[in-house]
Length: 275
View 1 (cartoon, rainbow, N blue to C red):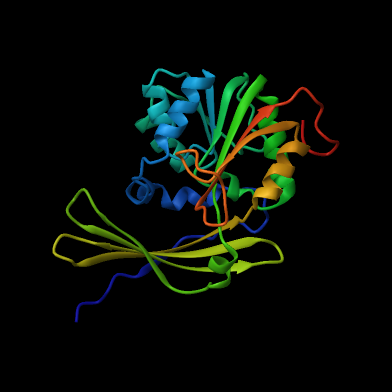
View 2 (cartoon, helix red, strand yellow; view 1 turned 60 degrees about the horizontal axis):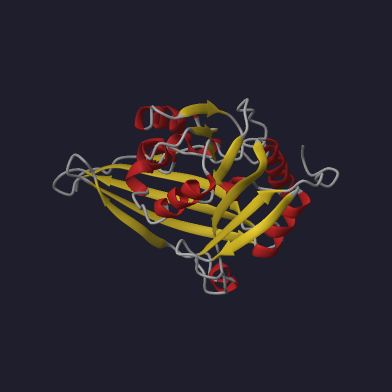
């Protein structure tokens, strides 16, 4: 039997809580292969069409959403902490303005009509204090009456209680004719609301020959609807709409997504909740 390639273990996300998104550097070359879906893009395009630009995306990754917004004619600024993801984003969406930085403190130098924080970027904020810091920063960079849209995964208690178990997450065909397989094991700590995910990648060459294995650890925080709405209000936002899907479905216990639209209010945020 041929010897299998050694597993490459990427460094886990820092436990210091100081760099909530930097753990994505070692996944940048796989990110666009993993996440090929576009089901959310029409929602953000319609929202931008209603609200107008300029638009900022917080936690933009490689530009999966910023790209369609830019190509639709909107002036887009994309903020991303991971240097590797940002460099890929610049190549993928050169028409956007890319800003490296932590979304809790990044200063784009202007204000926007619409802010987007999509596809679980908000879940990378590992404490309520992190969330308040981001929301305060996002509010500071919205024009009066500007809108912030946040989209995160909705986890049911039954789903979280069923962890951990090894799951096969996806299969993707590679451009060179190979295949990417991803498996994961997740653990949830109800006391901290932190979900730790151990991801296992197997990359096969043409003909089914295993050429590389990787393992990577990511940590996110689970936010409930009530908690998210409270954090928004504490940060000076007025919650306008809450949806359970990209077709505007009501949010309920069976929803896979939690989408909150909140407008910058005229009131001053509560003390300690950010700028």
